[in-house]
Amino acid sequence: MPQSAILAIAALVLMAGASACAAAEAPAASAAPKPRALVGAYYFDGWAGKNKDADTAAWAKDAPTHLTKRMLDEFADREPVWGWRDDAPDAMRRQIDLAADHGLAFFAFCWYWHDDPSDIRTDPKHTGLELFLKAPNNGRMSFCLLVANHAGFEIKGEAAWRKAADLWMPYLAHPRHVRLGGRSLLIIFSPGGGDKAGFEYLQQAARRAGLPGVAIAACGPAATDMGYTHSTRYNVVPGWEKGLQEHKYQESVDAHKASWRGSPEQPHIPCLSAGWDRRPWEPTDPAKGPCCWYYPDRTPEQFAEGLRDAIAWTEKHPRQATAEKAVIIYAWNEFGEGGYMAPTKGDPQGKYLKALRSVVME
Image (cartoon, rainbow, N blue to C red; front, side, top):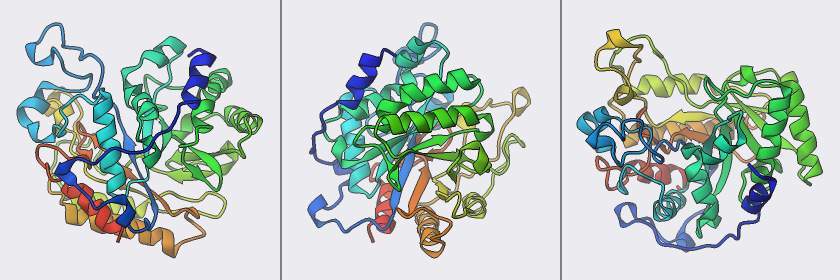
């Protein structure tokens, strides 16, 4: 990405305003109590770009990248109230208002590395991030990056990590970026693929940019001597690729609770899953590919209880948590994997958002 374009992102003018969606209307901001914690949610943008079947299948002609025929046929209730695509400015403005009205403080946008910088610039999975930065109401929320350092998008070698750090810097310096203890938050998926020298360069680049440093959070256990300053999770999935079995959502909640562990040297950001059921992305015949356990009985009440426990954990363990009592939810819009809070055709009144608000703004 050209440096001039990157710097332009950091210089975007922030504006406030816009009303919330009537489907999940909340009280006016002036009447809202102060949030109990700094609660964010992962934002996966598989809902832009061109579907791989667009040229061969009628159903996919206008479909986003990660929509599948099975989602249309069997899981149509997961379609967001604004439609499957989220690549219009109005859709982002609506999401910001909905999230902010219900106590969500930030989106953690999934970010993907490519060896060719032009592919980073044109990756449709970065559409939501760019729309957020341009949204006139983005002053209502903050944002950070979740570096999806996994197969197909791995950052390999110190040189690549240095290039990535330079690309991240305008985001990290953006006035709406999430900060923990004054440091901009960067979350790394698959922390074992991190690079110590690359992280050292990142911290140096941050200081050169006038920042006090970067809070680098590992999605999973990671040694502090690697350069990770915090820990968290993207999610915790009991039964990953162990076969198609139905389980209770409470099992997922309990598995996440068991992962809430930190230390003064590496504070923890507890994660809670809003759900897990990736059948729309799995083959109908399990023999044709690995399938996972799924948890179809989730309820807003169970979700609220789990979130209340996550916030309580930060309050009861101040030396293991962040001073901001940061908590992160999987996810805002992982519709293919069943982890979502955004209002859908199956939840047009935004019951999960109302559950969020009942905990965060109580």
